[in-house]
Length: 302
Length: 302
Image (cartoon, each protein chain N blue to C red):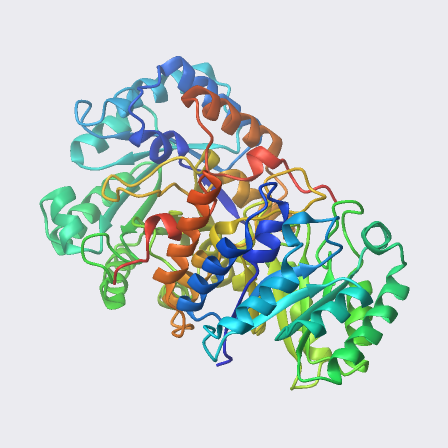
């Protein structure tokens, strides 16, 4: 049975849409709260232009400060999202444990995000990936809008497989498929992951990133699990949203995801009470209820 | 590919916990709203003692009035929940299309609900089932607390199989497994349904009823679907709760469930916009947001 790895992306994909900029010392408390849960990876920010996204402006500082404090458990990796070469340079200079980069499978989404066609964006990405692979930093490369696009609707699955093929040819070992718009359904998830697993050598691992726009987040995670996916991205309390959908569109709630896998007997290394505590703090900080269930109900008592 | 049947239980399992008693004419509007969606079965009430549950006191009247109006599309069946012999008599006298009865797999839950052991409750149920089978009325017999119990925690799976075996020996053709407490996880769901399908002759069909207490409702529906389950119970907007859990514990939202199966290409006969309209009316009536996603976001545009 393959290991299930939990990648907590709430500090980045959860917070990035929040207008209230969270002070660095509060963010550090939340990250150290997550440490107590012992997740595999915590994404703490995005190396985006500081003026473009004030919530992420302290990403470099956060890495430096968290590394200095030395409170991180050995099994936890700190990741950061990188959007371009300048961001990659910043990431490499502040001690990230893992770099996450990605290109969209949707031409419209790619143009809006990067000003490049999908083909050009992928070429640029592969060059960045090769820079990371010269270091000891872990690397995840993703296909965004892999299950549908808020602009274009359905995405030709061959487009996804074409991008994955280029990643595989470049020697990339961890590939994430991201459902940026929340359009994925579980049959599609199983079909697409079965295909990419069949394309990849045995030492390549796959990750998934689902949004809960239409409530299918956990069902999609289960489908991805059935297909063999090893890394699951989720955010505290289901916080977050996509800037291009105006609808309810949070991430998969980390606590609900971990509760599911724990009840399935497939995760034992994570402390869900610690995850719940962080989600409660975040709910209190923003003064509203978050969409997740388990941080409110607690775990199932067996 | 087996047909996916949707059983809308919101009028019963959704409403029964609401303190505001909904007038009969409003209930009729909601049921006729559901008719526009063309679901397979609509459960409109429970033949419980009228003073014990005032919200369900007009169940007989609702059946009589709805039958008289003749607005029901041919493909839609009206079901009612029956708890005892007196209720069965009432159901047979007011023109129900389908009778739903059940016994709990949990001794504590069974004692609290019926004052009987599981074995005695099942014997009584089988006698009631045999009465129904003398008529043209459809019948569904369920195992409640099949995936765990709010009082007892885990339920021995052999206990479930023992009850299902007695139902099968009694010639029952539609068996529902109900997750009364919301404790089910998708691996367990696949395992248990795979087992009961293996026990049953080919003409026996299975139903599922999940609650969303821990957010796993849709994931469990997907798992049940994968095992071959043909009937899915759900409530508008995810309304509802179990009287014995004090926590957030709505049903699976009908709109989210149908959206999932439509996107999987597995349901074509249901009008989801009509389902969304009913959920919106119910949200407005009770003056609060319901937990479902799709009635708020609308369907995915392909």
